[in-house]
Length: 329
Image (cartoon, rainbow, N blue to C red):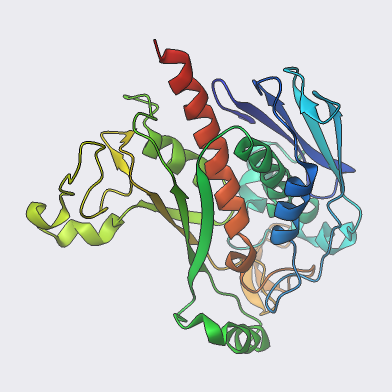
């Protein structure tokens, strides 16, 4: 569905080429200073401009139409809207008959019986992550934790000082690459998470995998630890606050935050829309035919996805933090 959260609840709306996208935030405590400069700064981090990012540039100017008065949250739902202005819908007309490989075009056509807005990917577009970034920026205003993100790799490249040359080469081939991003939360506390089915790491995984292009999530050491011994993986406690010598569990034990840094690694798949011609089924002619995807797309969406993942983590932590406080005696 389109709503996430228990106490800090967001409802996402809009499509890539509709007039606007946006979010309604319910459960925001009253009296929180709403820093619109922080919202704007986070939205700018998501925007293209670097080598390997889309030529489509939206200004992402937003309007807050409710829930804020004199700069502070009122306790009413906050509605934040972002206009879509730089659209070229004609680039997508041919995809109704020949869906793009790797995209949701085909499954959306079947599920919604052709009534979906297919332009720019519609409801499945990464464009909607702008509204999530804005919601996450507001979520940061409610929590005491510090969040950050780091791009670890793109494609086969580990030395990111060479990223521009690498992505230019990939672009010259008409292709794309993915990447791995680490998101970190510091100044953490013990006790966030509601086992059994609202474990902190489970909620993080759910929200991260809700983001377009995310295909894998690791908490702490992750899959690498499958080949380790228990004596290697276990995090030995070193003080009465629960700090540990290592942090292979990524700050979560038994689905509950343990006070160590929260570490999440996320795999972003290669952008599905590429300039290279692909052979794929055409539902009009009922045979395989060449497909040239028009439109404006990222060579490596991972290059600007970090702030999306960071702010989605903020949304999860805001919800869990409010639940923690609600259950405190």
